[in-house]
Amino acid sequence: MPTRQELIDALRAALQPRADCRALWLGGSDATGRTDALSDIDIQAIVSDDAIESTFVAAESALAALSPIARRYRVPEPSWHGHSQTFYALRDCPPELMIDFTVMKSSSPITARFMEVERHGRPIVIFDKDGLLAPVPLDRAAHEARVRAKLADLRDRVPLLAPLAIKAARRGNAPEAASMYHGIALRGLVDLLRIIHCPDRFDFGLRYIRADLPADAAELVERLALPGSPEQVAAFTKAAMSAFDERLPAADAAWGGRAGGGGGGTG
Image (tube, rainbow, N blue to C red; front, side, top):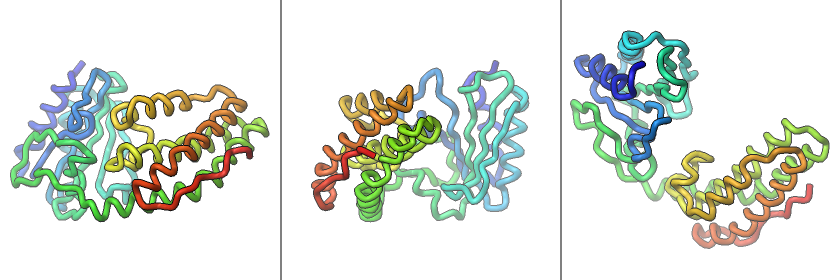
C-alpha cells in the first residue's frame, strides 16, 4: 500500500520537471498543522493556462504507477472556487487517503486567495519556481463586508425558516426534518458562532469546529449535531434557535448590526 508521503513524492516527481507546472503545494490539514492518520491529501498546482488537462494526465499517471485509480471525480466547471479539481481514490489505499488535486491557471486572479494564511493556513511548498506562494494578507475591508452581509442574512433567515424543520418533524417526515434542521437551524447557529468567535473563517460551515470555536461552543454544536428521531429534530431545532437568539446580540455588537433576535422556534 502506498504511503501518504509516497503519493506526494510521486506527484512532485511527475510535475516538477514540467516547464508548464510552476508551483505545487499542500493545503488543508498540512497547511493548518492538523494532519493525522485519517487525513487525505489536499494538493494544488499552478500551471500555464493551456496545461490544465496535461497536468491531470501526468498526475494520474504518477498515481496509477503506485496503485490503480479505483475512482475519480472531476468537479463540474465552473467550480465554486473557479479552478479545476479532481478527487482520486486508489485501489490499494484506504478510502480516507484520497487525493484532492486542484489545478489553477497562472493567469487566474483568484489564485492568491488560497494564500490567505488567516483562512487557509500556511501552504507546505513542494516547489515554487516563480515565488508565487508568498502569503497574501486578508483583504480586511472586503472580508468584513462579507461577514456583515452574512450576519444580516442570518438575522432575517434563520428565525423565519428554521421552524420548517419542526413542521416536517411534526408531520413525521424524517428526511425533510433532518435536511431542514441541518441546513437552516444548525448551520445558522454554526455560522453565527463563527462570526462571533472565528470571523476569519465565518463561512467554513461545520468543518473544523473543535479547532475554530471555543470549547463550550464546540460542545454545543456537537451536542446538537445528531438528532435521532423526528421528535428530537424538533427539540434540537428549538434548542438551536434559542442558542441563536441568545448569541445574536453579541454578533450584532461586534459587527455593528441591530440588536434583537429571532422568533422562538415553535413552528
